[in-house]
Length: 272
Image (cartoon, rainbow, N blue to C red; front, side, top):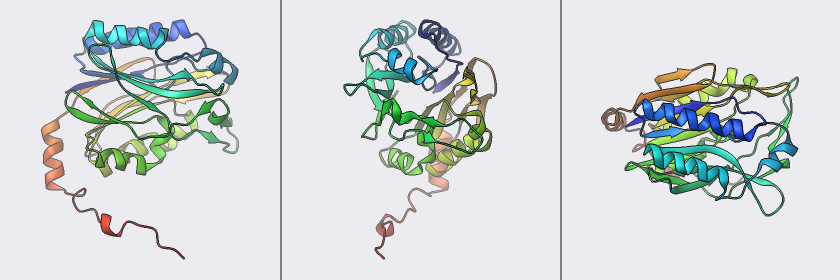
């Protein structure tokens, strides 16, 4: 199976962002990808007010355009995430998986919202405009189960363990990791999730500034179940692609049976 991670510098112009996303999907198809992953908030990155204004219903014009491109290219597409209009006036950080026919095969709404205030860094409060999801989602892609997640989710290993227990062999991570936290933790966390679950990780990132003072780290990458980085794009808009050695994954899981050696019988919190 061949996969591609698309790296973008989305800003406040939805039409320009969509055009870039469609071009990157073309490039992924030209690289022979079966699956292409767009980054978090590929549709819009800017102010909170702009994000609410940018939100669309699903289905809507943006999701229709991505579905049409998936069908035209015969490509599985994870539309990283987009601002989906919600009934309470906020929006959802919604990740849509399209099959080769351009149909939505799965939807995941980001569970863990990015509300932080690190000293000396811009503060973020995603929950001011976004409502969190309420379920864990996996889906079949070309006969392989994939676990869906978005950005800040990567700091919550229990989510990915649930993906693995559901049979996942791929972990999909669209993101807009900040430059500050990305330098310290992005690759570390992605490789940890790959190794501890013996899964491939496909991580598509935003890069560069969207508004003054807010910059994303980039470094879109594809990682194998041994924790080896198969491909990485540190900077700039574009794609990275790699072929996944599924036989090696099966052999690794047999030779190093960490998943089978789990002690679920004692994994519980004791009172007191």
